[in-house]
Image (cartoon, rainbow, N blue to C red; front, side, top):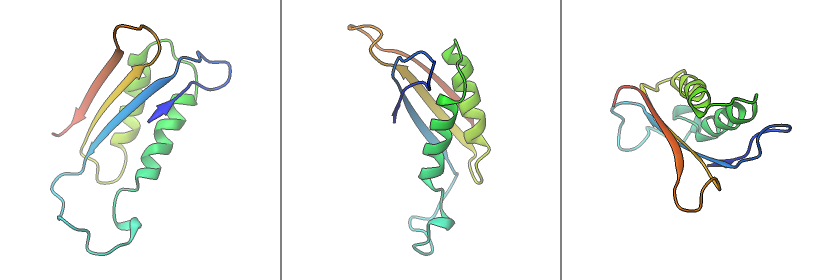
Length: 103
């Protein structure tokens, strides 16, 4: 998911990749109801909210807040997040990763 900082913030675009572990799951849900699975729209909204809420100088601060929020989702037992700053350098990627919970 790509995002930029909110109004008045550093306008450097960032990309957020998030993996959520829900432990052992059945191969198929027991029905086709989105309320019985993790709704990725909620995950997306948390990422957008955290990335635009307030200016933070350090990616380490942002990734910690985001990881904590995602770990609070029902049924989530592990979270892996990567945040990359885009367009910083032409010859390399600037990114940070964090892992929390069970994998």
